[in-house]
Length: 127
Image 1 (tube, rainbow, N blue to C red):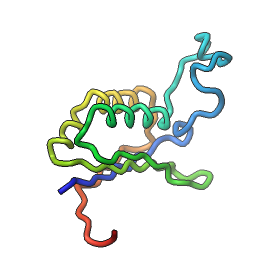
Image 2: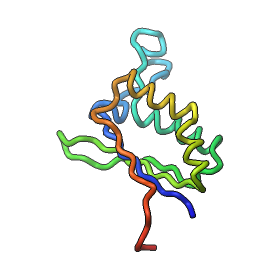
Image 3: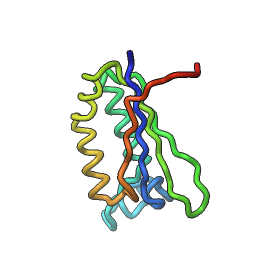
């Protein structure tokens, strides 16, 4: 039976998405080295999702969602994860990309609060 997890991630409000040109746009300051490139959670998510899809065949679903928030509310990102078995979960947790995600989140000071991992979850109703 597949194992289902949900991760709740709490980024700082100004670290969810980049505003303005992409980091290496030919006309951005970052392209000419005038300021440091800082990652945002949307960029991290894209990179992690690509890695998981290409390198972790035991993951059948891996989706990141932003929860809409009102001005001043804590942003929340939900990661919906489905694994074929416990070995797939352990492979994901031990992957170099997950180590990179946690290290980058800390170095870039992206988190407002520690993430919460829920699961494995047991379904009991629905379709």
